[in-house]
Length: 197
Image 1 (cartoon, helix red, strand yellow):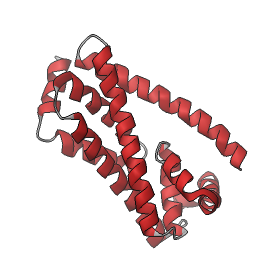
Image 2 (image 1 turned 30 degrees about the vertical axis):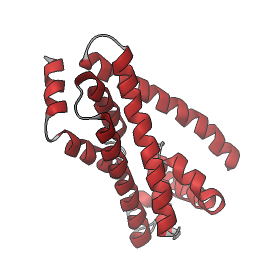
Image 3 (image 1 turned 60 degrees about the vertical axis):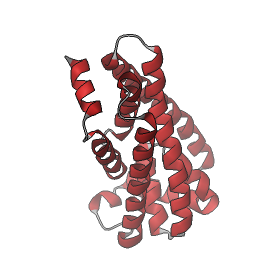
């Protein structure tokens, strides 16, 4: 039953627009499961042959870059204090950290932040507010989005190719694996952030 539902989703003409919407939404609201969606569609691309893996990566990359640019533009137009959540001490600390790091290593920080949900939001808003040049921001964000999309989709594709049990198992295992890797990367980067501070 679940495999049939997943087959219907993967073969739907709405599959890639749904993926685009989830990844774009994830750039603005970290509670939307953009990473999990890309990983799941990567698994479905191998398990069902649809949508094509290259299309999954391309759509996810464009959506991620678009979302990052939207955050940048919000930061540029609105700044970092307009809404109450922006004035919370932890959020202000994240903005301050991002501001200091963007001045020292903008490309490294922008690229790395793409892989960390809340850091991505803080860094992109701060990049806009601190007037990182838009062409430079877009170039770095686009490369980072492509790397992120390929990474997420390939996890799903590899799991679907090697784990027996059909699409439902491949999607479940690939999402759990991607979340585990993400937690590991977050832990490593958190240690590095403390060293940079």
